[in-house]
Amino acid sequence: MNYRPRKKQRVSKAVLTAFFLFKNTLQYVRMRIIADFHIHSPYARAVSKEMTLENLDYWAGLKGITVMGTGDFTHPKWIKEIKEKLEPAEQGIFKLKSQIPNPKSLINSNDQNSNSKTRFMLTVEISSIYSKGGKVRRIHNLIFASSVETAEKINAQLNIRGNIKSDGRPILGLDSKELLKIVLNADPNCFFVPAHIWTPWFSVFGSKSGFDSIEECFDEYSKHIFALETGLSSDPAMNWRVSALDKYALISNSDSHSLRRIGREANIFDAELSYNGIIEAIKSKDPKRFLSTIEFFPEEGIYHYDGHRDCNIRLAPEETRKLKGLCPKCGKKVTVGVMSRVEELADRPEGFKSEGFKPEKAIPYKNMVPLDEIIAESLGVASATTKKIQEEFKNIVAEFGNEISVLFDVSRADLEGKIKPEIVEGIMRVREGRLHIEPGYDGLYGKVRIFEEGERREISKQASLF
Image (cartoon, rainbow, N blue to C red; front, side, top):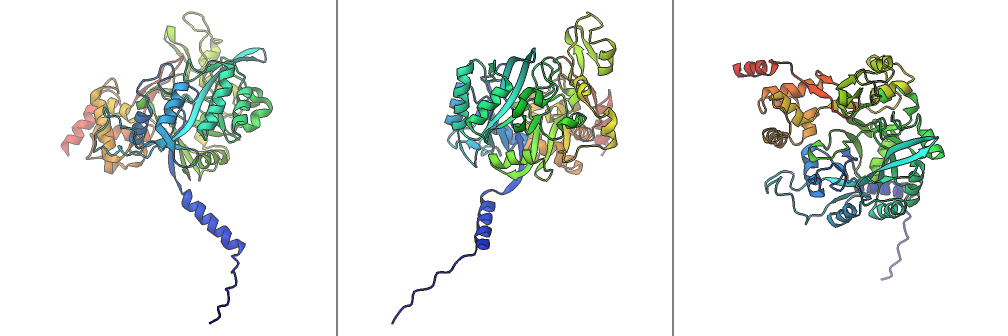
């Protein structure tokens, strides 16, 4: 029998394109991602020694964080730990190696977070102190890298220019523009974000040592800046008052120095779980991909208002102007905070927020008070760090999955009956913004009050009747 060879069938270009699109969809499925990019390691000043990768992995699960920044990748000992304890996961992001033991002091073998799916992204904050335009500038910038090799290239260049061993957040006499050049030369795929942009002492717009525009700081390299970090003392609505910032994405991160404070500010995406997927979602400023940010109530931030801590003087911007920036007790200059600095650069009126204005493509946001602080005030306990409050926190998280879900997603009906009525009421009031805050100033946190005197007892009495 003679066999005639089959004629090769040609696959159309359209079919091939569809195949590869399907393949990529399988590889990178868009998902809800909550990310906190800016934290610090135990090798940074005034940071808890418990901020290890193992503990961060665990606490991210408690908080509901999908992607954690590593922070501090310039420090030799921290990058060594990163290489020893993390392994590549999806493109440009990492996970804890399976053989790394869970922190026994925090969890047991039955803990739902013992097999955490936390991912890590390589990040670091650099402090630049330098002279430009006849003034001393003190600017903090946040750097993202997609590989250990890139991080080590950056480290090698910075090590030539200063001491990167002394602190997890190194202080370098390096112009911010020059720092950006070094980062992009190491890898054009790096992402560079001016950090907590309104902080008085150390930021691009800071009242003490900053600039009046991104262009003034970065010159021709400002075209490589796509996002700004709002910081704890400002929220997006405050930034929307400055039209020059409309073109930038606004991201929010905890800048945490301790485990319980991670996630107090964060970013929510519907994006591919990958370095490129997350960075492109930020750059896009597309509210369908970059869903929202989670924000501290800015009044609670340590530099929201002006003031002089030594004299216990807190001032609203209009009071500072009347006093010509001087403390009414001692006559020294007050620390001008974020609200005053925003008003100085703003070209939109203060009342626009209540009129529902926001710039085109602005990313929504929602404010929060950390769950353990809500629990503490709801139960009338002075400190959220007590054993009683932390146990209550972990019990609630174990019941509902994670802190962010409890704060924003779980209905009142589902919360009631499973946790104390005072705590349910506290969560609801925070969601609705029904709280009183004495604004922070000159390095002191604002004081949050959810309940008036006697209200907690009344809520408890009413609940007992049912």
